[in-house]
Length: 171
Image 1 (tube, rainbow, N blue to C red):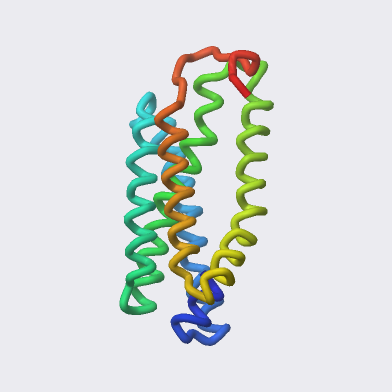
Image 2 (image 1 turned 120 degrees about the vertical axis):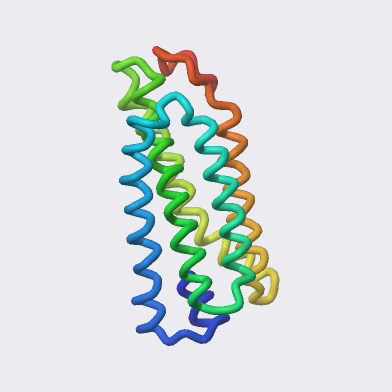
């Protein structure tokens, strides 16, 4: 978002730095709230929560890209990161609910590795897409939306049986 806000929306670096800290804060809030909801009120519905929340992320990514003002971009991005935080909390709570105690560490390690690979590749892929399409950010937003679609597909395929061992997962 920082290059988009500076290059496409005309913000200066100081304003961009201050404004982009707001969605980081709302992401943290979403993670905390999501953890509490998954732990209590919405336990057992994680699969469906991840799907609905990911659909909301897709909607908000679309709204971010089409927002007519910087104020709306930051508002939609803040809402988007809240739902991202809720999905994040759900994903990290699931191993504790479905894997045996002996396999939770490995399961969380694999989930974290996947997230780290995504965090490593995403900026490069987005930069490549923006450069390939002559500075257009449309392809980068489409890429983000496709990543959220992959989250939905992964959630649909979740096996919610309790007591799984890592050996029962098909790698």
